Length: 235
Image 1 (cartoon, rainbow, N blue to C red):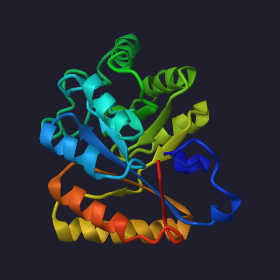
Image 2 (image 1 turned 90 degrees about the vertical axis):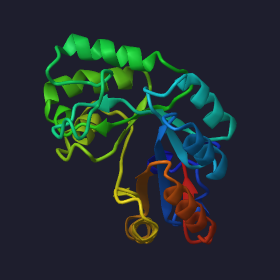
Image 3 (image 1 turned 45 degrees about the vertical axis):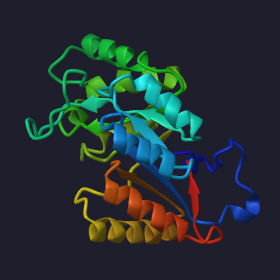
Image 4 (image 1 turned 180 degrees about the horizontal axis):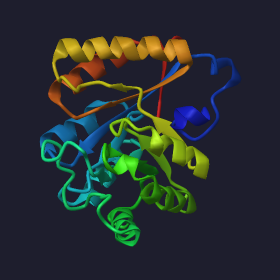
């Protein structure tokens, strides 16, 4: 996500000579739901790949520690009410448009207090909650007050989250490509090729994936094949 601020993973600005190199930022979400898959993602992928901790993980603070010790930037993944329920069930910790604003803010405070050491939030689902603009604004105002950033997964489809984040001046990023909606090797490989092309056309591109075995293998192989003078992986 720091790609949007032209920062490198150690917090310094990217050298002027490197500023023209296309950049990709990649986030892997759902960390903590599957122990084996989560450990593989944390240990296998480069530290510039960011990890999104699920609030439904068993002992989420332990997963933050594991990810941070391996050098990964960490986000929390707040679930948001989906219009596709029950096929997309955001669960009991979801921000929900049927609740009062105060109740959603209490849920947000609970999510924020689960773990230390994260840099921001990344949305999960939200095709219904993302339409509740009156609910969204106080949430983004709270993120700004706490110095957090926001990554829009793009799943809400409304664009309201990214727009309101910009209006409130919360540092934000928007996912351009979902790597594994269809988690097959060919599909993931094709989307990675598209990610590289998109980064070259617009300077910065953001991708999101799950810690599926095919995703981790294809992503590791693709990243290893990218010449650093032609494409830069950033947090």
